[in-house]
Image: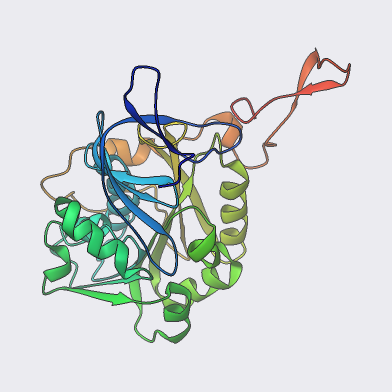
Length: 308
């Protein structure tokens, strides 16, 4: 971890300051930095936080933690899989911690789950330091792990998938190609006719540009595109978004009973996740003038991302 992100505070406690987004930065009190390494793609670290337990950090951005991973993985995986009447084949792009794969394999209907992760070091680090996230999923007979580029895999894949999930980092570096229109078109081509595509689309408060870019490009490919919300306390802004697209199925409708062992998902939560606040409704601008407000220079004041 860089010297700029791990420091000691005034009381001598070890603190990790995550990379800033939209002028916002959050900090985590640490018990220890447990391990770090660097692949050809990114800096990988495992830290032990006071509030959330062990956490995976990539390029100074926290990815998942022991305490609240289910608040991320259940919306990402369970909502699209339970919106599908018969998800036999599932493809996961990214998700090297194994949490998404574990959740997909909870469904007895899933006959084959393929995961394509570009960075083997992430898989190895999480298997060593965060093994409960995958819970043995990589060794499951219905699972196949491919170390490779998700975009390249999409170009060559021939089998149709019922559900495709993108469990990626923020859309920079190795994940940048996963929000391109080409990727969405390839994903649509790899889906069965009644398939569902879903991905995490960031904080609607702090990463609105990324959310809008993803949904706009998805709408150019899928006739049905819906964003849904949840809360992940360790993520910037806490409020988080995922977006699902399909040619035929409405992802906001649960169609099967959930598997045992879930901590967040219920059919009511599934439906409610798609009830968006006014500022996220289609056609709402990201920023608007605050009526009558002026900044110090006398120009009209612009709302920041929280009021956008």
